[in-house]
Image (cartoon, rainbow, N blue to C red):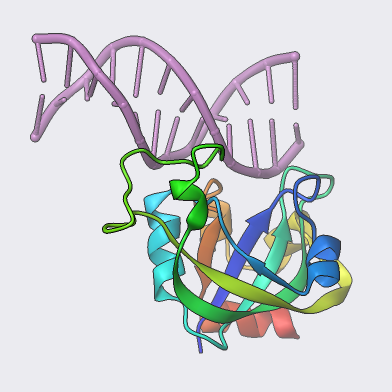
Amino acid sequence: MVRWLLKSEPQVFSIDDLAQQQTVLWDGVRNYQARNYLQQMQPGDQAWFYHSSTTPPALVGVCEVVETCIPDPTQFDMASPYYDPKSSADAPRWWTVRVRFVHKLPKSISLSDLRSRLPEDFVLFRRSRLSVLPIPLHIAQMLEK
DNA sequence: GCCAACGTTGGC
DNA sequence: GCCAACGTTGGC
């Protein structure tokens, strides 16, 4: 089964917010490659939750994809910063998923820890701006040890 | 706050 | 289709 990594700035939405809300729509993604990964997700897939733009940036928890192929409602909402005038209800441009909190890591794994434990070609290091990314199984297994 | 990386936009 | 300008991300 594929594993994913979802980034969020904790000052905007943190793992504790997810723990409190339990289930959230992962809306607001406006990058085509990230969108394509969201479209590939399947119910039951696990995703690591990553805190970005904080000190230290770190993997902090695990969540689970519970619902897929959802048109991101914010693209139709003129009041939303994620409103996209080029999208329409007939042809939504942005799709997303719903995720459920699974658990916080007993000890978060900082980016520097990740750098020391994982191959330097791991996609998080190479494509640092991508907010949704796949984690190859062999990498996931290294993290689970 | 700085800046490198890099995605997007728009003129041509 | 190219590419310069510009905006955003995110680590430091």
